[in-house]
Amino acid sequence: MKIIQNPHEIQKDLITLKKAGKKIGLIPTMGNLHRGHLSLFKLAQTHCDVLVGSIFVNPMQFGANEDLDKYPRTLNDDIKKLESINVDYLFTPTNDIIYPLGTNVNTSIEVNRLTERLCGETRPEHFRGVATVVNILFNILRPDVVVFGKKDYQQYMILNAMVKDLFMPIEIIAGEIIREENGLAMSSRNKFLSIEEKQKAAELRKTILATAAQIESGKRNYGSLQQEAIQRLQNKGFKVDYFEICNALDLEKATDTDSQILIACAAWMGQPRLLDNLEVEL
Ligand code: PAF
Image (cartoon, rainbow, N blue to C red; front, side, top):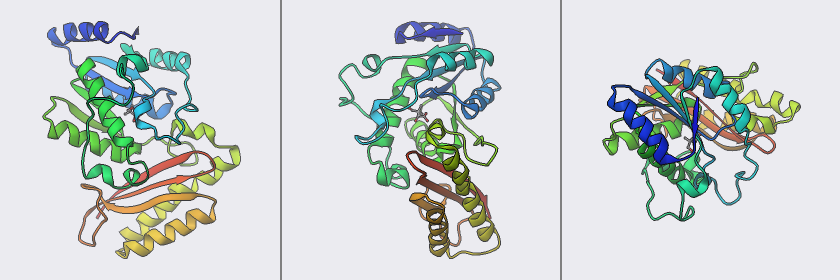
């Protein structure tokens, strides 16, 4: 695997490969790679000739009181994992490369509507940071195909919308959620859970599944299903940010005629804020 920090150097290599007819795949990450990330790399491998990963803990997507400093940085381990699955290139830019003037950037990318719901309500600046850095990475690396994980379903939808709206010549593919044995969705933030918290955190998936079962059995009183779920999570020790039954196509609150539903939840268990979701087809 070629590990490159200089954006011009990696861009030169990738443009040469593209000119030779190679399809470039990209998985942008913030590192601390786990099985969930590796599944995205493996999926991308089936859609491209040259696979590129990027590791950059993006300061622009963290709010003032969030965990930027504590975010786990494990570059040497990450490199070993990527080498073991034959990733071709790893791009590891620094803050100065991505944001030469700091994160108070001259130019940013703002995706509307989809960013206002769910995580956007409590993290108003987050998706501007995500869309901006992903755009910068796309411009440097020029991928043909990119895989985003469905654990961050809203992020996937926002970036998909950005690519479509701006006519970027990139195919976006969604990778399925990979779970721990107890059902907890894999996340870099799971390592902040104590053993006891990790056990309790399994309730997030169980609650989503129980809600899905009620919807599938014909219940459409979404407001009260949400309240029940929130109560159940609070009883297990979660602090719930949101538990929402949405239309999976636009993330607006689901109505009883919608047939593609997304149940999405964000909740703190101890320190980490955990995300999970489930698509339900009616
Ligand atoms: O999902 C992530 O790890 C990040 O939000 C991403 C897409 C790499 C942008 O920093």
